[in-house]
Image (cartoon, rainbow, N blue to C red):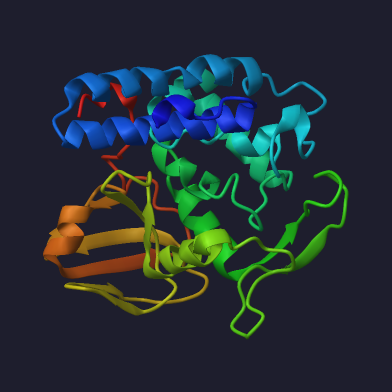
Length: 286
């Protein structure tokens, strides 16, 4: 029952707003326009919550775990949790440049925590901005490289910093204390490995990045990296069934249809590759 969703804390309010969006999409698919519009309007109310709780990053508690009653996360980590309306979120943050600056600060100051779920989508958010290549690199970094992580014992900043590779090829595969509830973290790694990352769970859109493997087969779709190298983490050229793509995503329909996706990688960002990007929006009018 959507009427019983929990809005008791800032994090729960954002999570419940996402639930309302998902319910709206389900009702829209079932041709229940009245309920779809109702839940869509309720989802849009996240903006009031976000402006009250997440817009001001000057407050002292923004990097404190459990601040304002939130569960296993900080204001910095939960503020990105609007995957269904990145267009609206970027506008609330002050526009593309400000949003990117905030993401830059977030990652540069080790405020991201890949060992837990609250901000798991954050590595892909540059895809919704004018600098998608930054998400291409971050996906690779957190999949294979050594990272510094702060853990959830006490508070977020300055407690128990730990350096290791987040995902390892051994029986104890995860970095210490990683939370793999319902396979969230292992699922993230699978997507990182194959070169596709869901832009928003519930939308048939997958952002592109360089796979970890030289060749991947997903049903009818084969993905080949023509010049695989651990140093080449940026997309240089993308060709789907003989047609060059100048966008940063594939659709579920394209994946289902299958064929050959050829990826050429680069050691340096190719900033003019993406001429068309996909950005989720509540105003899209599905």
